[in-house]
Length: 191
Image (tube, rainbow, N blue to C red; front, top):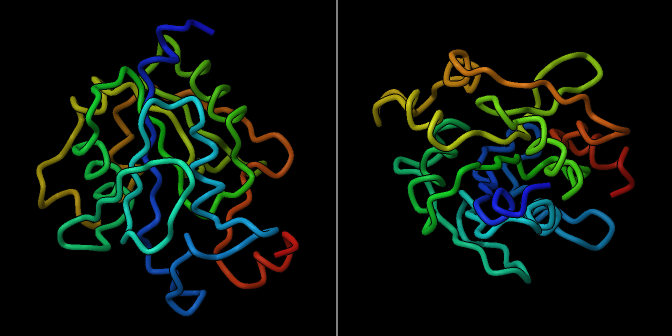
């Protein structure tokens, strides 16, 4: 992998959702095999120069991260992603985005996504059903080019934001595409 690319990569972890099917719990604080989902998500960005977590700063991580939340809060993944991008100290070539409830996404997953994004506007992980997951890498300049106004960001569907972009589909390996949307999902992962 190009070392210059590695030096110009930042990550945004989306951890401010409502977790409605989990009684509104802070998903980032949920533990799986003795580690919080937030720690696992931050670990996926081990190659990133900087990581921003979009959520209340209620869970600590070993790695230094910047916590921020949308204003107004709970604006959805588009508002979360763009809020995270706005507070990055470095202006990266590529921005990784990951939902906190995808504990099987690893640094290797993010490397595959970054490689697939080369020469394109980005790349996203797709599950066995072909659906795009909230784990991807975007060209920062192209993302800026499709960015909606502040009011339009809140509640906007991620597929609408990404529709004009040329995105590679990266098939999930094993259970990378698994997300934890319910207590049953957590139990099925052994948590």
